[in-house]
Image (tube, rainbow over all chains, first blue to last red; front, side, top):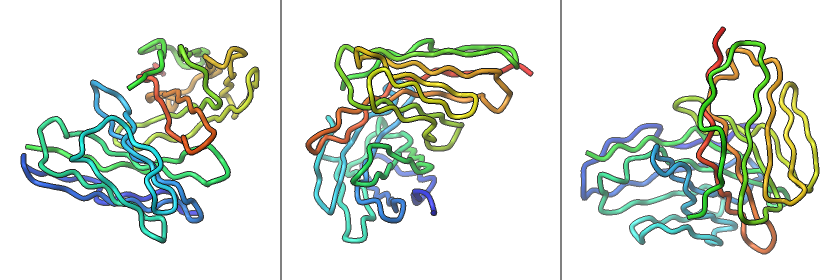
Length: 112
Length: 113
């Protein structure tokens, strides 16, 4: 089975721009979660989608949003980028029956 | 957001030595997961624990789910250079629709050949 894939792997943007990141879960997995990883804060939960519905949301501003499509692929959008948004954004997928989350390689976002 | 207390923050050991790291929380978790992350990559799941008191092995790795459900530890026996990386614990309160993972800050492991 192919693992979780994320595109792009690297991205450089400037302040004020917006960005869209993509995640394709493991085949058959219907839950997709997004996390932000920074050296200072570690891994922080952004949100989780299941069957195109957002089920859980972390403590991030409204500039961070996401969606999930009928094929379980998910996108995450960050609008009005700030320098502090520079981070590794990780997506994880899980089956509806199990609790293990499997991570993709991440998208490294740099905001200049 | 809530963080788990993971210790130690870093370890520098000789090849062949055993390693132990742990995570504690003020809250109860239903599931404990241990991940390893290499530079520039996403975390890779090592071991998943679902029952209080459960002891699970994966090769040279052994992890336990604490009886109080507020802690977990990971042991690595006979370390080798490829064990180098950052190890994270993660707790999850399953049930209902809550699948959020709460992570520790990680333990950076360096193995000297």
